[in-house]
Image (cartoon, rainbow, N blue to C red; front, side, top):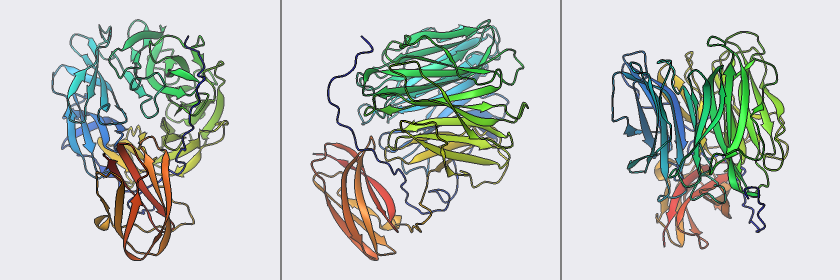
Length: 529
């Protein structure tokens, strides 16, 4: 039965609680400035998405308008140097002048080179025939492409301007459910028509057997859908949470928000009926986004739904509001309210994700009054109803007013998080940096930083130049964020060589992190026997 409780003893992982690493000590970001990703002359990008692979490679996906009013194509770019430079990874290979793209998402899955897949979902509509289609493909790191069959992912829309207007990918890849092989992957979508509806496809076998499920239907209007996958020790089956907004007319600006929970293996209803209404006041919410915990050391699945709330009673202004829940497996979820941002009513475009490397929910949104992208974190504890902590007030260097930023976050296995957003038709990326206020950090010269041999077997040596004497901690961290080794080291001003013994590390990829009062950096390496 699906609710069976595991009786085996699970070793609780030591979770990295400080996920802040950097090659440069900047006051605002790890980059010298926001990185404009491969701008296109006379083109307009939108729907920026970011996904970070097990080895730290960063994938950014986006739609493109080229001298037109519709998004006519899409592309994926990749960075292998932490987000400083990008090259094209994949692009739409079939161009049809009658087709426009309406929604787009990506997800990086797999914790080693063999399992790795980048899933790319996009919806398109033929503006002449009304044919609406969702396409899902899985890409290896060499961009070998497999098309994933999706039952009933194509239909003729009754409105040639709508079709599948919103979609969302989710996975438990970074810490999979115990029966996942090798991970679960799910896709939720809004489908327009005489009845607007929410549909989902899901499996626990890496996208090889996607099961379809109709989640909800209404004569009203649905515009935004978001999905998240949760895992926990006490259940071998993951849970897929899907949230959406519903409007009573085609011109309504505000509506209600609902959520439904289903199993990830067969897309059937989980323990409880649902859908649940998470709105606190009638027809005053929109743009929900959900995140759920992937933590197999926990007995429960916790989550947060972030949304816009029309406290300003205008069509444009809103506040950011969170509805959290800290149990899902054994009882109906009890939703608690947290007002993330109250103020001038100009907060919008919320997004929330979860990073198991540091057990935090990551919140971001656009504050139009200050033209700022705000970043906040909330600890994954038994009480997640407290206010999130402001980690970064603004993740942009550019001072221009931005349009439709829609910021997104994804995290690296060592806890560092990358942000992308739309900025007046261009795509920008920045990275997390959160130095303690009492520490004045100086950088390790990247030119002098060397780790060898790489790949390694039993020992490695780290060589670098430091501008200060320092006492530092050397931590070896695996791709799930667990600290496997800690050692203390004395660092001298000038040249340093630090020999490190690898204590029977299995084959795989790891991060070596050095943290001290003046030295903060990390470097990745591979173990091969």
